[in-house]
Length: 119
Image (cartoon, rainbow, N blue to C red):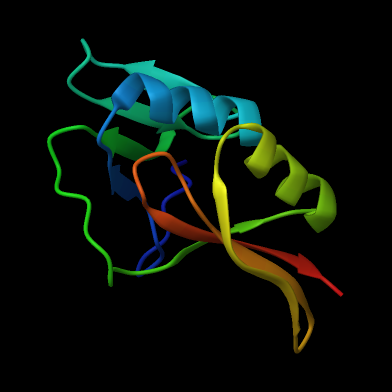
């Protein structure tokens, strides 16, 4: 049976300026793994490794104002440290919001993502 759900977010694609640098960043900061497609694309593997949940597209145009992708963290402060250590830039926070805390960061290509944790 497929894990895909009707009307659910199924795949998130990030445009990138440097595929190898972006893969290094997400591997170091979050432990992500990738399926490589000859340097023209990298699929983001699901946590269990059985499928893809997104991709890195070096042919896409990095632009602001798109949807904000949020990741979950069990330890927000350690995730902030991992992002900074991997070369990401914290753009906002961490800050409190109803139900938890979150921060926003930019990856090496300039894509803005957020990370949240329960309170």
